[in-house]
Image (tube, rainbow, N blue to C red; front, side, top):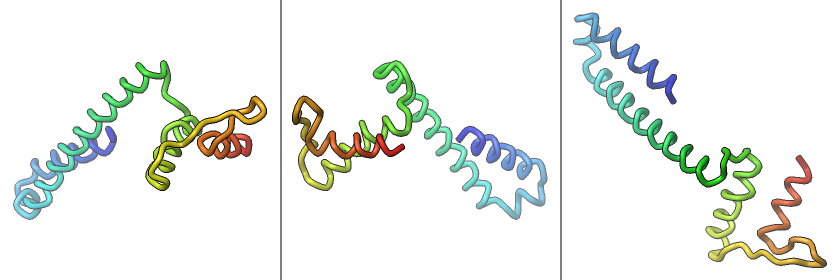
Length: 108
């Protein structure tokens, strides 16, 4: 995101420097300025999210941890309209919220 913002800022600076280009690309310059603002907002949100995740987990979760611990339970709730259950079968984790992530993790 920071690279996109830097590239957009560089492009806007080049357009502003050249009078002829500025006249031809007035509308595009406004779009570029809007892009810069949007990307800056996204960078701020991601930074705050990163800080919150680090405070909660003491680290940023790996992609597998994020998928199994955050995304799959949310998908389960959206699809089945209930929270994924957790249970124990023969002293091993069971239930729909446990079986699939464990099965998927063992295959990686």
